[in-house]
Length: 495
Image (cartoon, rainbow, N blue to C red; front, side, top):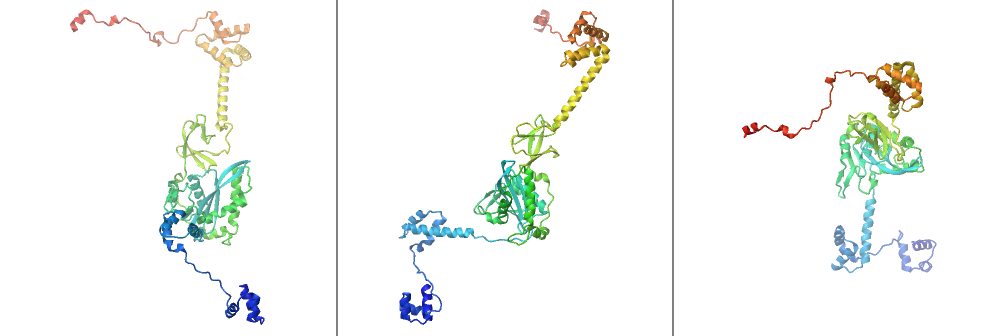
């Protein structure tokens, strides 16, 4: 190209063909040729007939069978190929490069309003109160307006995925009939190369209840759901990176604020905020059907311990004591909260799950009330016992009670009960006389009262009932077996 330009320039300046050929370093014929052509010269590669060209069909057949390069080379040699192994490998590399380029080729697809939504999640390690916690960030996006819904969980189960989709549908106020998803086991059991897909039964049940058609993207090709894939980078760099929170509730608030701001931000491709475009799409969404919540909420049975607790991941959570040793049902919400239901489906309790293992048993809220009622009942019974003793034995009883309290404080009420029980055998006057003697000698013990009653030779009270009608214990009588023998006359008659 440079020589052609020099020839044209020198000719324009009036130089002759011989001078131009000497200056540029080409032949005079070349100068004449370039001067005749109005257009610049073009390079034309020589066309070669390659040794490998006549075996291209055989190579395609062998590639379809999965043959490696050396195997293909050996097969070609048997068929008369005289080229090198390097030529075979070079050709195979060119085919692979073409296949890779074809796979990377991506067509952008824009759907109409209310036609499609996409779902995916992202794993992130978030410092919570100084401790790293693995969270799963869920995203649901409407393909037309790019309206987004975010939430997070500490687990990633089919129930978590379904719960997120239900909450997203409630947030949008409707849903699209097509749902583009990834191939996670929570939704897709198998996705073969030929396009045969087996979906998770629980996920299919959710899709059937809402009338949604799931569409699993191609394996290892996340860009087929690029509308939900690309925003994760923005979330990662503008919210998650460098974020530290004191608790999960704080992160939930931050995520909600970020979602609101993100939906108001102008979309780079569409040039309009998702919130503005959602106003056009909302009317095209399908109406939310009435679905029985029990069909979507996964619950597990638990047995309440005898002290009123259920166990979850090694931590204890209190439930009403009336359900001790009975079965309840728990609903795990995103691995963050637990709801406890009775057999009839009534909500009993709700807890935020502990992120750390408990070092001590949590205080049961009913224990304080029960202990207070028990103490009040015990004090009432003791007060009644003291009142009964003092009313039975008057001033001497009060003085003796003070002595008992001083000498036998721990067993005071046991002594009072025993002394009062003597009234079943002795009269109240005799017991009062014995107490009076105990006051004189300074002895404060129920045995002192008992011994004085015995020494006073007081006749015990007669039984209230008739001795004949008393239930006496059965008497075991031993007899010789000969008493059951028949007389000889009867034995002869039987014979």
